[in-house]
Image (tube, one colour):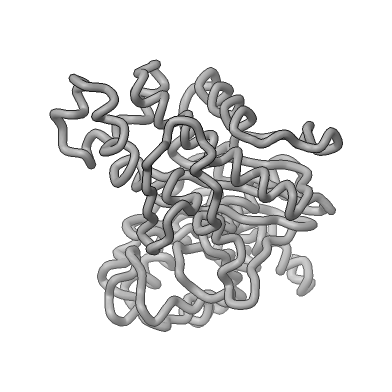
Length: 338
């Protein structure tokens, strides 16, 4: 059996999956191995190889059955998988600067290696769950976590752009001042922009902007007696349970997404919109409420575009590895390897 491996490389763990020629994933659940990324590329690359051997053996295959490896990582990195000279949060070791991820893995494995950033990989997985791999459809995904990732998929292919920064949706500016209840708010992103999507929709935004802004409006709230970072991590759960302060934060985030999706509708006229990430890893009732609030935050749409669906991305923990595997499968088919 010929398969493609999907590898999602994070700062502390590597997640693996395998997909066969029939587009069936052979690993259903989270399959992790320590990444040791802080120790530099030499050790981390070997960790990826060792973990892949374990994952392949887990489904009764050997490394000889792997045709292509699809890799995804956080950025910033080029479309070819060369990390930024300035490094990144997940790759702080000096040897990661300008490191060629695909070359480093390919030399160790003797396999072709494809690359996506983690946001695009998640978006590709979300697209696959709706449309499969052979499609002409367009989808836009926003993935809310510590930051805001995402991607644009056109005809089943992710939009990488000239330098690999296509789909950096978190840094798209939105007219947030039009959202009810944010008068005087100045949402600043870690990139320095004020009012981009990440500055409104992310765990970072909750701690940096939303709690300091909203806590004075809810005097006596228990979060006022807690360290902000600790309180920020509790907001999602409390919002799901109906806490008024936390619901208000998620309402504003949903309305910010509504404004963003309106921009995407008028740019791409997509077939589907998708929301993923830890922010909506909740029960179905809260997810429906959140999607309804996204709709409520959208300006009026053209009649022809009112029915563009909004989906919740499934399998959040494995989305990156699965998207990377789908990209690898596409390239394997192009090269006649599958």
